[in-house]
Image 1 (spheres, rainbow, N blue to C red):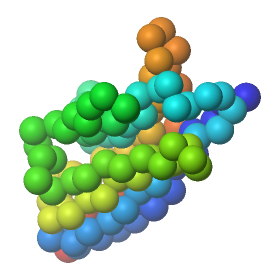
Image 2 (image 1 turned 90 degrees about the vertical axis):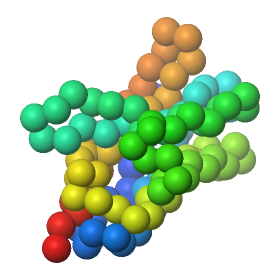
Image 3 (image 1 turned 180 degrees about the vertical axis):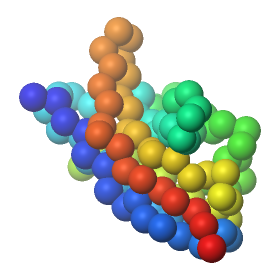
Image 4 (image 1 turned 135 degrees about the vertical axis):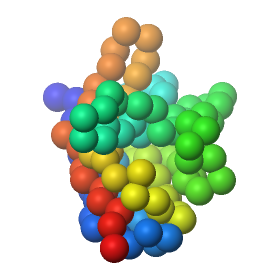
Length: 114
């Protein structure tokens, strides 16, 4: 059974930092693109960052502030988030994609507020 389990979401003040982690299990994730998406209240889900063996992609809104990393040995993907803004408030989802195979985690909330 494929599982993606996120952790690390929290309430943080503007300008603060947070690190999200996603543990993947149940299949050979080394061939998958892993990434993070987010969905703010009342908005559509949007890409934050993805990573695989050929490329790392960031949304323009997080470039220079967020960094995605991946450990192929442990099947984990992390998202280091710095200089957080209230507009980063959302539920963050871990995603795994390989051609038509797409998996989602349950999500972890990040709230940026003073």
